Length: 312
Image (cartoon, rainbow, N blue to C red; front, side, top):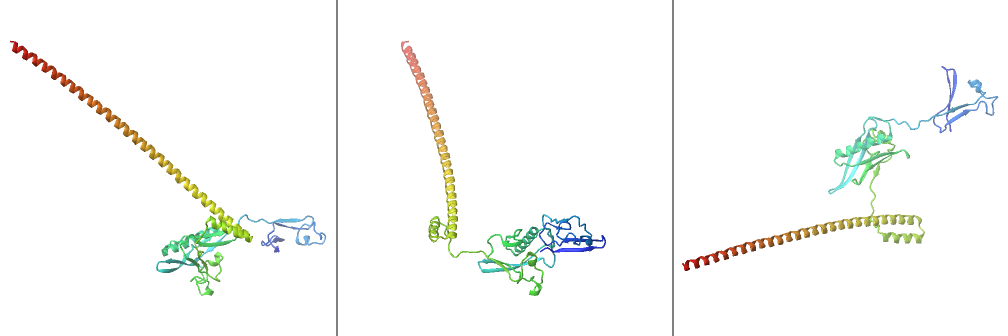
């Protein structure tokens, strides 16, 4: 459905025909000359030349222009952090204060909401990491905890103190601006299984066998995906074992080289000690022989002297 606007401009003294801006069309043509009623159309009465058609092109910008104003009427987000501590369940009702200004993109507003929630959590002593994002495809905001520190996250669109005034609140909630209605709170909690996860390769093979027998296509696909995961895990473990074995070989080689070097060093030191001892013994032997020879000569001279004295 195309919403056309036709009006008269008294200043220019002419009629103007245009599309109202809501239809997804690129152009439209006034068939003054080529239409079926060329001789009976209202072209001349409206001030148009009926001897030729008039085509109008409609131009659209490449990107949408976003101007989201946050002021004191929509700058608060009420939420509750629920955590389990040793003493039991702990619940903290908080209010995030979003900066008041005009935001030029949805992503910019999402970032500011995320910062405001984290600031409120930090002030409360929890330091929860939040993720707020805008999806261009779905045209929706997403608010969630970035981690597993919380047991539950309550976004209090309906029960918060800043809920709409017709529900008894101040009416300052940002929920409507972000696309969240006040019909109910949004509660996010992690999904946990009741039994221990079992992802062994043999379990996957047994499940695959059952799914093949039952001709369960979804089950077969899940089993194949699990087998792919099992293979990746085994490959990772084999690679890790190979790396550890390689490091052990390198360590063993280094140890052998160090031991061999120490043995060679010890042997060379021992050889040097033996040679030094032999040289010392040889020196001592030479000195002893020299002393002995000297003593022999002295004894011989003494005997000769004694003989000479007795002759006289």
